[in-house]
Image (cartoon, rainbow, N blue to C red; front, side):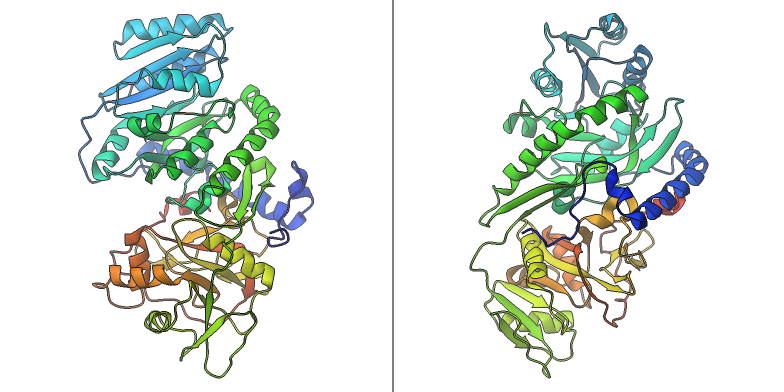
Amino acid sequence: MSGTSGLRAPRGRSFYLSRPRWLVHKLRRALAERRARPAYRAALERGTFLFEPPAPPIEALISVVMPVHRVEERHLRAAISSVRGQSHAAWELLLLDDASPDAHVARVLAEAAHEDGRIRVFRRASTGGIAVASNQLLAEVRGSYTAFLDHDDTLHPRALELVARALAAWPDTDWLFSDEDVVDEDGRHREPRLKPGWSHHLLLAFNYVAHLRVVRTETLRRVGGHREGFDGAQDWDLALRVLAAGGRFRHLPGVLYHWRRVPGSMARAAAAKPEAHARALFALTDHLRGFPGGGEVDARVLLEPASLFRVRRAAAPGMTLAALVPPETMPRPLACETVTVDPFPPSAEAAIAAARRTSADVIAVMPPTWPRPEQLTELLALLAVPGTAVVAARQVGRRRVACSGWLRDARGRAWDPWAGLSADDPGYLNLALVPGPRQAPPPIGWLARRSDLLEAWEAAADEPGPWRLPIGFARLGREVVTTPTVSLQAANSGLPPAPPAELPALHTDWLELIGA
């Protein structure tokens, strides 16, 4: 699958230096974030960056596990205090001294256990590493859910309360993850990471389901906990194995986790990145080989400084394709079936009617100028990711994104996250570099599994209008994604009408507060 993306990256920070346009975009965004820091901190104090799940908290115990090794005393005390200060009382804190050479570690842990009976302390005779230490704590967990906290990070005072309410509202959740921010050496909050909702495609691109992560304890034990030898990528590997085992993931909006950035930890992280990336690539490749069917696997680091990856597994051979085309043109760019629709681009009703007239595996709605064979290969590979119903190309005109599909924001408005971006802009949190979740694809330039189209149409039979298919996909848990690696010439097409209230919102106006 080489040659499909056009985004093969040099190693290291030279990535941005080799792309001056990208560097300009990143610098502009960094300056905007810097200017917005005072407003962000004020909003954080007011509780703006919290989501209130519509349910009382579960009564089940939540276990917080924290392996401890080399850490400053003040940061360790802050981490423990952030758990003890939780508004939700049904917790236990399990601390493991992973044979730390720092004398204060044993003293601080002993003091904490003496002061609070909900704290239990364990010690290893030799250093095992993060995966081994976490698994040892997992064997001692008493709670129905396990939360993971690094030894120098902190939780928001209401973190466990909001987690408990979310688990009550969505009891089928196996893995709950929240938003996070960075705390600098002076204790100031900055760089909030406000994440999209759950997406298999995003998990294949970067590990965005950590910090804060709360996992059903039974699920953790069923998959065997962390795999040894994956330190630096152990939580990503665990997420991939939980997903492969049928685990359900859900995003809890809200900055509930504060990741501490200090010079020493950053230096260690930079030194460990090559090894961590190699382990992540192994875990990702292993995950892709577990897909039902498919061809060759290709995995590489896309953006090394941001730990962003590009992994693909070629579509299964023998897949059949039916292209929906206007009646006046009958292009046959490939050995595929063609089905005429009028008018073109087809409405949702017309696309469903055409899908019923064919038995092909995949339905394609493309512009008169079809994508190149390698671009179609890319679209089909993304469609091969389990749970994916639709994959779309972005439409670009005059080097700017004209259309990439739509989401519904917190006010009920349809919006396009990439509209207006320069074709070279990596976007917020580099999300414009990887397949982006959508609720409705552009009118043309998309592929869909025929079976998913028909099933989604029936799943939302009670919803009229053009948003029936997006609502059906949401109810079935199928993904609609747009890829930045395939760009087609922009077409003149209008914005769909505002979606009904039942369409799930995947965006919050919080982004406006930080200038993103």
